[in-house]
Amino acid sequence: MAIITKHNINISINEKSFSIIVQEQMTTIQKDEFEKSKDEFSEKFKDRDALQSKLSVKEEDFEINKHILAHGKVFNIVKVMFEQKSLNREIFDAREKIAKEDKKLNSLSKAMDWLLEKRYDLIVEGEGKESLKQEITSLNISYETLFNEIAKEVSKSLEKK
Image 1 (cartoon, one colour):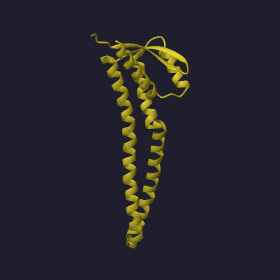
Image 2 (cartoon, helix red, strand yellow):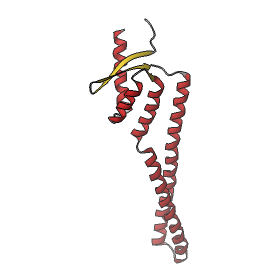
Image 3 (tube, helix red, strand yellow):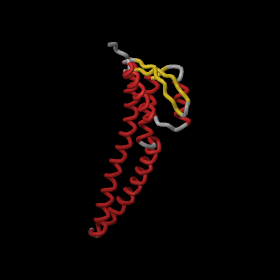
Image 4 (cartoon, rainbow, N blue to C red):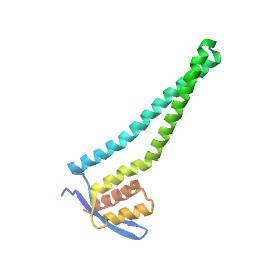
């Protein structure tokens, strides 16, 4: 039995066939590059999560102050009203920043697709690589779907041998 690390496979989309070579394992350099992409992706979510945490704290403070305003003593009310005004502005700003981050990330599935595209660039080669990439982009096929098909084809390739 031989150890096979590359598979020549064909992926068909709408009667078009694309011949590619898929590496089963990434090289150390490819793994490092992919890890760097994953870290970059992870940092984007950490930034957004940090903003969300800050927003939650400000919203809690705002709710506490609303209670104080409703039931507090007169000498506290003016101070709390100024704090409410400031918190209201901070909450608005935080929500705006989160909305911007959400637009950047767009959605988890698109972000995941971005990572899978990076993986595709690293482990797929051959004459059909670029044309397959253009085809799935033009047809709006996710890289997750593509990798599921690649896995099926690699599995078939292994069964034959």
